[in-house]
Every structure is written in structure tokens, then in C-alpha cells.
Length: 155
Image 1: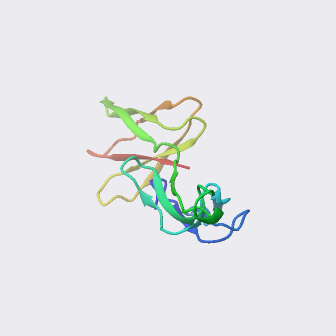
Image 2: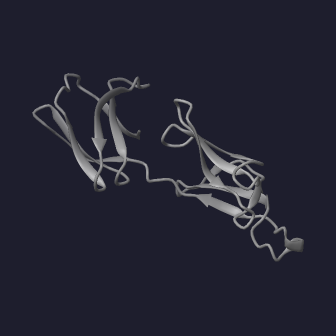
């Protein structure tokens, strides 16, 4: 499961060349192919995806890659899937019970700011933020509770 709530995985076969795919399934069930292996970039994914310390996804393929090795079928690859950066809330401030902060993320994405009043959280939508650059400001003037938790999620 990715930071965006979507699920990521690989298929051993399929895709435009039949050598397998890397896919995403969103929480509303929409499926999309992110990578279609074509032998030169790998063939037949062997492992599941693993999230690296850098937030990227990694996997291996059984064949493909350097096609001059192993009688032209390649010896497999290690591949890296780079997703847009996770949104972050920075520069929090409170003045006269109005919370304000900056949310940063990938330009041209839509982010939803959510809040909760207790832990474990039951998240509620606060506002949507559309980025044209890499950051935007948001405020919450309805902070009637002594504490509130915030998060930013990609839509």
C-alpha cells in the first residue's frame, strides 16, 4: 500500500508486450498500468514490490535487460518505480485559534487536507488544494477543540 492509499503490484505476464506489468489499484477500484515490460527494460516480474528508504518502489524481473547475455533473453533486471512526492504539511502556526500551514507536493496535483480530533483518527475533509507550483497555504478557523490532527493526501 502506497502513501496515497493505493495498492501497487506486478503481474508476471500481460501488458502491451506480454512480459508483465506494474499496476496501481486506487481505493475506489480504478486499475491503471504504470509500466509495461518490453524485455529490454525487463521481462516477467519475479518479486513483489518493496518500498525503499527513499520512498520509491523496487522489484526484480526474471528475464530481460541486457539481451546480449544468456542467449539473447537477458538475465533479469532490478527496476525502480518513482512516484510523485508525498504531500507534506510544513510551517504550522496558530493565531487567535486559527491554524495555518503550508502544504507542499508535486505541482499540478490535487491534495485534500483532512483533520481528526482524536487518535486513532477518523479523518474528515477540511479543504482541497490544487497546486500550480509546489506549495500552497491553508487555514482552519473552526478549531473549537483543544487539539486537532492534520494530514494531506493526494487525490
